[in-house]
Amino acid sequence: MVVFVCILLAFIPALFYSWITYWMDRYEKEPRILLGGVFLWGAVVAAGGAFILNTIFGVAIYGFTADPLITDIATGSISAPLVEESLKGFAVLIVFLLFRKEFDSVLDGIVYAAIAALGFAATENVLYMFQYGYTETGWEGVWFMFFLRVVLGAWNHATYTAFTGMGLAAARLSRNTLVKIIAPIAGFTASIFAHFLHNTLAVFAQGEGGLAMLLVVDWLGWLFIFAIMAWAISRERMWIRFHLKQELQNGLITEDHYQVAISPFKRGLATLGGLATGQYFSTKKFYQRCAELAYKKQQIARLGSSAGNTMDMVNQLRAEIVQLAPKANT
Image (tube, rainbow, N blue to C red; front, side, top):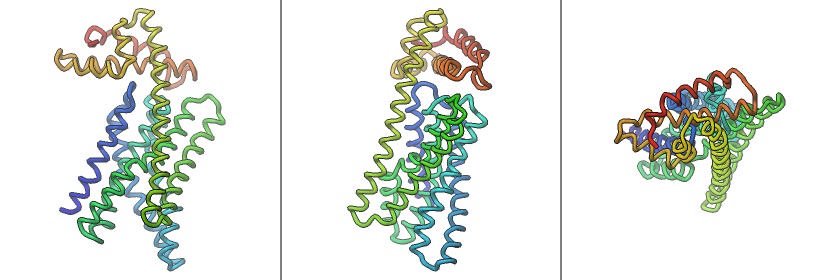
């Protein structure tokens, strides 16, 4: 019963935070099956692997030092950042390597990284609420851990791993070989450092003042990532306005379709309106394809043709848009 409640308290908010992350990807939504896959990777593979490896590391350090404090510091500041960011980041790397056509922007890198991390955090929070909450102080401990980790620390893991996603995205969007090598390493290093900083401060933070200082540092990290996301969304809107304007001038889409495609609000209304007319799925797919077309054109303009971005794909998207246009609400 207690474990079941802890699972609900951890996973329901994690899924809600994942939905917020998905919602912020305003124009070209990532495939839900991939997002579900990285969430499950974080919750099962990354969390399970991290528990095993961190435990082995902690036992080894304690066997060598026989000092609980040194063991906690070493595990929290060395093992946890390196092991956990490696395992969470591997989910993003898989998408980057195997599904490159779905990895189109900095925002995509953040979205995949954040959702993998939220899956990880959900499983970790179940452990904390039960092991460090219920077993020590009963239900009061459960609610304390819930408030501390699920409410106050909601976006911590997502923030750390977002740096890995941004590093991979920078490599994806550059022609420079040096950037392709350095950016992922720099992003991964930043994710480890951010994780290290939080865990180290958490060890030494004392009382309400220490907790307040820790929260300020954490929330500044959140704000930084959300600011990057806002910048990425604004830049993507510029891409869409520019590239779809060309398609409007070429007669591929109408002025009404163009005005809806460049506005997330109008796009949402048009999609919802499709429920009443039986055109929900065709409308949703139409505007998704319009966004994909703009993204592919932008990448070809910036990077040239590649396995993931070719004129054949652009022409295929145009053909789909022509077929869907009569069934798309405005």
